[in-house]
Length: 290
Image (cartoon, rainbow, N blue to C red; front, top):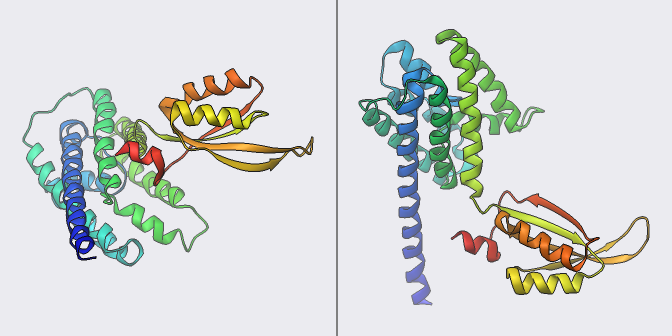
C-alpha cells in the first residue's frame, strides 16, 4: 500500500508536465500562425481570437493583451461548469498565447498572398488549437458561453457558436473588407477541420458492425490477423426472423481495407457498417495511440 501511494503523485506530476508542454507548444503554434499568416493579411479566426484581432487593429494595442483579457470573464463564468483544471489550463494557454503573439509579431510575414495566408494560417492555427484542446485547455471563451447558454435555450452548442461567429465575420467585413471576411470563413473552416484531425489522430478509431452467416470464422481471423478484440451482439432479422450473432469491433482507419478483405474473402455477402468513433478509452486501439 505505501508503494502505490508514492507512485500516484509521480504519475500525476508527469501528466501535468506533459500537458503543460503540449499546451505551451500548442500556444506557440497558434501564435506563429496568427502573426505569420492571418493577422498581417487582415484575416481573422472566429470567437475571442477574431474579436481580439479586430480590437487590436482598431486600437493599435497589442493583440496578446486582448486574447488574454477578453477570455478571463468567460473562463470565470465556466469555472463551475467545466471545473478548476480546465480553467487553469485555459488561463495558462491564453497567457502563453499572449507571450508568443508578442514574440512572433516582430518576425517577417511568411506570405503576402492572402489566399495562401488563409489556407496555411488556418492549418497551422488549427493544429495548435487541437493540441490545446486535446490537453484540456481552450483559447475561445465563446464556446464556454454557448455551453452554458445552450442549457437554457433550444439550440445546440454548435449552433450558438455559429450564430456568434456570424456576427464576428460580419463585423470583419466592415472593419477590413468583404474579401477578407470571406477568407476568414475559409480559414475558420480549415482551423476546425485540423482541430478534428489532431483530436482524433491519423489513426482515428472506427467502429465496425458485421452481419454475416459465418461470425465465428470471421471473428477468429480478426483476432489472429488484426489483433483486435471482438464482441458478439445477439440480433434478429426483422424480415427473416432469424437469430444471428453480430460482430462488433473497433479498429483504426488504416485497418479498414484489411478488414474488408478479410470479411469479403470469407463471406462475400456479409454486411458491414463502419462509423467514426469520436473518442475511445481503454482497449487495444487506445493503447496504440500512446
